Image (cartoon, rainbow, N blue to C red; front, side):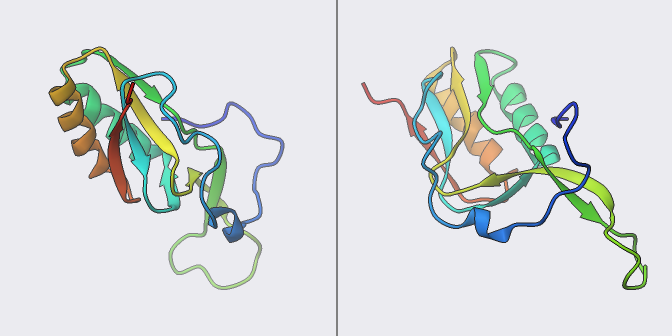
Length: 138
């Protein structure tokens, strides 16, 4: 799964204001021909990115090329079940990426257009944000 090799700090502040507004970077197709674009905002975990990637790869029978345009660089912490309040922040639990509306999540190229469209549609079911499939208009 995706996660940083090393970080400056083990735990970070939980800034919920980062998810407000629309994405200004990574909003156009750069590498491929067809892509998944986020319509709503939220947090996508490394496991969800990997699940969507596997779904795409299996649907096109490992044909074509896939680009992952997001990277989970934010750590979320969690405390164990039935742990009393206090005694500090929990241990690092999972890696997430902040998604804003308009962000491209996956791109594809090098396979049949209908097959790629179907593969990306299956991948959108694995993601917790609302998405749409867009193509590169020339």
